[in-house]
Image 1: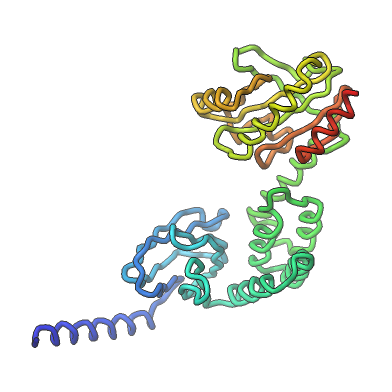
Image 2 (image 1 turned 120 degrees about the vertical axis):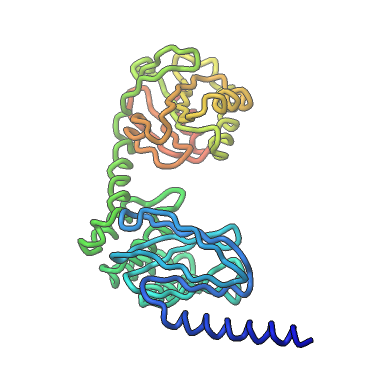
Length: 339
């Protein structure tokens, strides 16, 4: 019994000592209290100012993680247990990380003005009707043109959508201060804006010359005077695989019109075995062109491809008449072109 009391006494002394030490922590630090849960967290920078990944080991819910930060940074933190979210830090900040009382998969991060403003915005978004959320995003960024929290809000509410409204994004970026526009994240979005404008509806389709699955070179000019459904896909993208299946009906309906209509898929798989298996499994009978450079593809870049799959409907005059049309609209537009 005396041994038990002795152990408890030592534990209390150590706990008191650790608390005193945590009060005296210096430098940029994350301090976590996750209700006794052991875990592993990962934090990574999303621009050149913190271009690294840190691993944080959580023991019995506690951690103290020091970071070398020379300027204000924007990062992301995640684990298998908790949803991924933004972290904003400047030199010598000490952030407190706890588990949300209402959602055990959500972390609460506090300790600086950036998180105070960002958390208030997120709380307001939850109670704002969908029809008014875009306006809320625009207002926040206009009111915080110098804050990196505006970058996070732009990314998660507009830029990371499945089909971003690039005109709106461009408009909002123009309200930001020059210091934000120079950040890597905004530069990347601006580059995407340029890419997205390269192959828009009413513009001429762009050059490609790639090998098909038999090694034969196929050129854009091979489809002169044809209506062409051109799309970019990969074996590992579930939506691409679903599109392959959906296109079988279109191919079946118009296969007798070989001289006036073609489907051409440009596959971006680096793994040739995965691509071959996908072509076989999805029963692809139309032309598949191979571009094993993946997201480094010059053709994908030329066409402004940023999500998969991306589709283009091209008329017999070589003009793009549809981009990422819903399936029913795509079928109707093809029928209209071939009548």
